Amino acid sequence: MSDAHSARSHMPYQAGHFEPLFEVEDRHFWFRSRRRCIAAAARLIPEGSVHDIIEHGCGTGFILAELKRLFPDAQVTGADLFAEGLAFARRRFGGPLIQADLFSCDFRANFDLIGLFDVLEHLDDDLAALRALREQLRPGGRLLLTVPAHQMLWSDYDVASGHCRRYSHGQLESRLSAAGFRVEYCSPFMFVLLPLLLVRRRFRRGCAGTGQAPPPAQDLIARELRINPLLNRALELLLRPEPWWIGQGRKLPGGASLLALAARI
Image 1 (cartoon, rainbow, N blue to C red):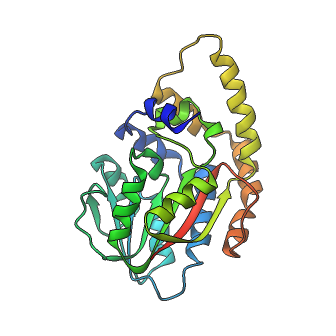
Image 2: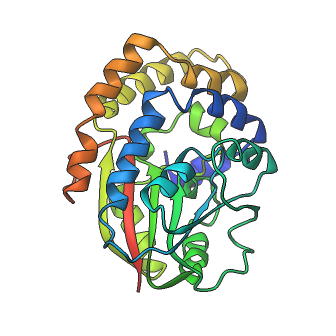
């Protein structure tokens, strides 16, 4: 599916998604595994170079609290467009929280590190967003981000989640370079999920050919977040080696998501 097609299917992110996320993030393999991979990539940043951090689109604060743990001496700020998300973030994080749009924030060269985790795919103009984030970084400051990978994995869940697109490795690196960043590390992750999702998406597309309408967005979100204890544990164990590879600066051979660390030029 092309970017143009996915953009036509785009719906805004819904504030009602925060509560079901908050209820499962601490237990769900995907969120726990992603957090470990983000932490491993953050350790690639030279020690002592990070003093001020902001996470845009911090949502329920699941990664925000991890950033504070990783950088205990840094000033860590959470920002989100939705007050509903910040209310949940406050239950996990004691630092400053602001309700703000990353395009209109009056931060110029304020930060050494910006986090943007599964946010860029929600924005109509991702290049403009990356350029706005660059202006908020000090010279040499870094952007750490994750996005969903492979447009071929596009599904009704992407539509329900408010995604505009999924990214290829080359597309993400190209966007970052065009926005004035030097890519220091970029790798797929969630490797074991890729074949599972390919089969699942193909099966659902086959079902869609019957003419049935997709379930409502809330039902789709609930279905994706449902935890099967045995499967949840198995997938988390299978994903356990990924943070080690990332922490060594090595690239994984594939995955359902992408992670990048890029420095402001």
